[in-house]
Amino acid sequence: MLGLLVAAIPVVADSARVGKPARGGAKAVNKSVEASAKEFDRYFRQLLKQHGIPGAAYVIVDHDQTVAMNTYGVRVKGKREKVTTHTVFRLASVSKTFAASMAAVLEDEQKFSWGDRVVRYVPELSFKTPALSMQLQVQHLLSHSSGLTPNAYDNYLEDNRPLSKILPMFATIDPHCKPGKCYGYQNVLFSLIEDVIHKATGVPYGRQLKERFFTPLKMQDASLGWENFMAAGNRAAPHVQTGRGWRPVKVEKEYYLAAPAAGVNASISDMGQWLKAQMGYFPDVLSPAVIEDLTTERVETRRHLRHRIWRDYIDHAGYGLGWRLYSVGDDRVIFHGGWVAGFRAAIAYSEKRKVGIVILMNAESRVISDLTGNFIADITGHGKLVQAIAAAAKK
Image: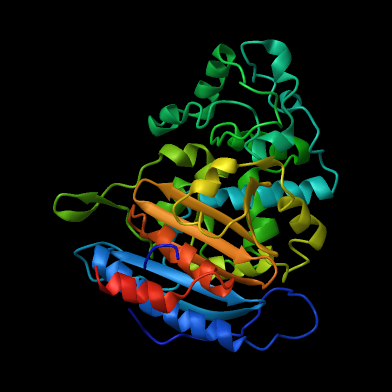
């Protein structure tokens, strides 16, 4: 078993389908998934209450149907406004799934190639050994396989420096392995895909997201950037842990400056649609070929086999394009998490069973890992939420 999680409101079934989903009619909801959803709701509320989390929301999807979409708590601690299914949260690094998907759609349309050199689109990028800059390909940005030390220059993002001021610093370092050969998580380099997309198409990244994803998927609350987040009337406030509990803090701009890496805002209603699209139920938006491209492993991430939440049941860990890929017996878990300045987010689905979950929280709490891991363990047959609930109750 993997850890613990929270207590319960009615599970809501929602079979509404918007946009242009796959043909063939809605699939009947799997009763075992419904049962897992009900147990998860108990676990969700139990853990959030125990940890004093201000607010959160989740959605569980079985194939093209929403099995459960529920909320918890308030948008701002100490105030009355409840979290609703349309409350907007920061997605943090779950934003990478949007950037990679947008890039994969455009690459499939032959607007550019994964093998293109990054310097073709970002000529100002250079490493200490200039020849190494020529080896960096577009696909290396989205698979974190540039070969650089993990999180290179993230500290400058946290100081609110724009990418244009950070890029010259790469001229002082070199990759420690050949691009494509080793994993090192990046935010600055990942975000260069915005320049690739803009220069290859002539259309800004934010407009691409709106026209190609948000509008056709009817993600009515979704947006990109700090200004749009602050303009949302129904938005969650970020919270950090203090000696006196959770405290709301200012919404920082920092990682918004790396929009493809961490700049998307969305509600749990939006994320239910995004999950369905990723699982293949909006082929006019994300084709089977694009999804296969996104979930084809580009680099192994062996150290994730030791992660406390996943280590008990994953056999292999890798990274595709904007997605973590965890092998679980004859199945794979397609996953990504996000954490930034008072928010946490997680999205995961079983590739074989076509069941997935998204969780959004307005607090920097690791409890989201327990929630995500235990639900996925349960639906893939590697754990029991009932046991997790009982273990959490003893805390």
